[in-house]
Amino acid sequence: MKHKNIPLKERIIFALDVDSKEKAEKWVDCLGDHIKFYKVGLQLFLAGWFPAIKMITERGHKVMVDLKFFDVPETVKLAFRQLRHKNITFATVHGNDPILRAAVEERNGIKILAVTVLTSFGEEDMKEMGFAGTIEDLVFIRAKRALELGCNGVVSSGLEASRLRGDLGDNLLIVTPGIRPGKNIEIEEDDQVRIMTAQKAIINGADYVVVGRPISRAKDPVAVVKSMQNEIQKGLTAGN
Ligand code: C5P
Image (cartoon, rainbow, N blue to C red):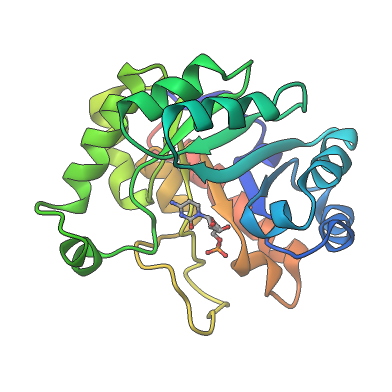
């Protein structure tokens, strides 16, 4: 596996799961020397997404818009049109072929990531929702389709990353949430199920890791970032 040439400060995408632009700004002030990539999800979006995105990009950082668009193709297409000219690097979409195709057609330079299976789902959840087969197979099928339709990459857990990287090649972008440090932090009422450390995710083939609570709930967030970046660096050099 050939790792992509991505700056270490962009390998962690910090999930700005806060309810105001001001709180987002505090995090970017606190982490901005160390992290250059931020994820804006549903919560911050509903607090007024454009000022938040502007605040991040004006500081020279990258933005991933994680709204997991899932709607009829025309609506997804028009939603993507709204993201035009905003300096957004990644956006997430979810759905069948026409939905993914609509996003790809209206991407305007944004890299499209297809959500495969949420990292908060386990095998039991999938059975309850009526899916037969394993999560790994479903993630693989969805990722393969996404790539064939012109998406740039996928969001998947670190558990499936090695198969995706092995079978779908080095070009595919793999962005991995569900990152938990091996030590130090326990998150009360954690909703993530398919988890692993940043180092293991990178060794398995992830290009980026999405991290929220392990950093935001730490006593010393910058120390956690540094130690994760250390791990990521080790992961990148392992096997080379
Ligand atoms: O706090 P934590 O590190 O669990 O944050 C995970 C972030 O990644 C959340 O913002 C969540 O929306 C996001 N995410 C995820 N699973 C996906 C896609 C995004 O957990 N498949």
